[in-house]
Length: 306
View 1 (cartoon, rainbow, N blue to C red):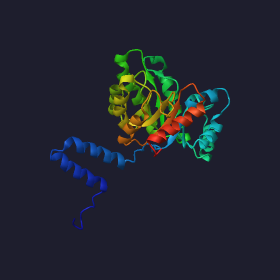
View 2: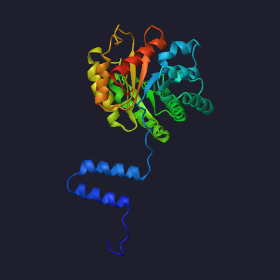
View 3: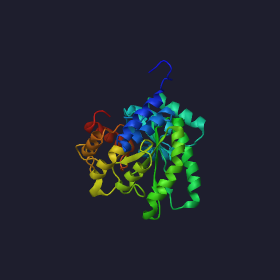
View 4: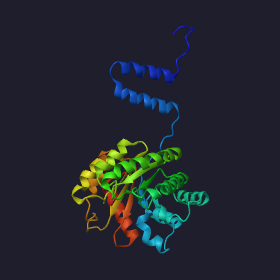
């Protein structure tokens, strides 16, 4: 560089280097890299980091919460005693979405060493009911804000509809409206693999890939989906999972779940380099705390990192 030349900025240097590669025939890949560079230069928000910890769904403790035997605040002490580091909160268990309540709840969890790994939106979104979609969008924006205050990295959605042939397009349009609100709050969106748009793994993955996999992923539930496809679905969904529901119902004398091969599912997640929370969702008929404890032991038997 001569003394009279203006120094090249980092952005210009990257742009010129990428442009030369595009001209040399490497267009597709390097145009995407240039876009990433531009996003970094503009200071685009990054998603909140995921939490590779053992968690528990408040849904697993619903019988105790519903009868008043537990509150969200006293859940903290129970999870602490169970050596579980995280909690995923169903919005049905939040008594208010007011910031002061949420801040107080967050501090209560943190005092007990419990991180909040997600906010689960309990009411499904009926994508075929156009009259309610604007209201549901507003409600989900409130849940995103609640998650941000609670310092939870994600919310879980359940998208349904009356016509399966329209589900994908309607879901994509709805999520495109919601994604800017998620980015603004650095909270990820997840879709669960259940009835509706998440029923078929292929449809769910196509939706994630079509939109923005940095901000949108899968809430993978061990116990959902066609029984004959449980492990195929796990292999497909694991690379795109931000959150995992360790569903359990009953246990044999060895402590293994009677309907699911936990070792096989956890091995699939591990091989996919899964780094999110594994969140216990005991749904059996026995004592909820004992069911959570048995599920905890089963997970740690097969994946000691949690």
